[in-house]
Length: 70
Image (cartoon, rainbow, N blue to C red; front, side, top):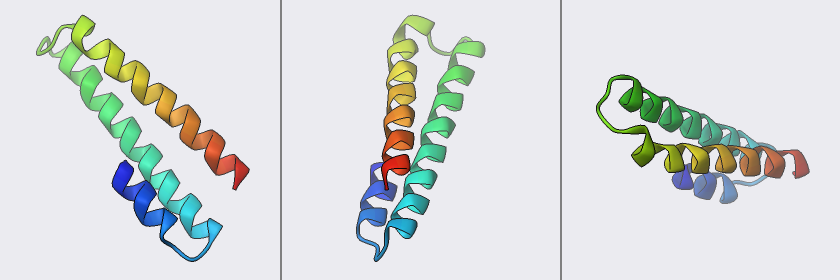
């Protein structure tokens, strides 16, 4: 996610930047899905993973809000 945001910030237009923010948001959803799978497959206890899932959701919200402001 940080690499996508960084790459987008180095682009020439807000349109391109928004595109890379969108990719970063997709990466956040991918991570969230992988964490949920860890729980569902009983690989990691929910107590260990839930704070990270909540952080992913917050990042998704912040990213979306940022995209709307560009």
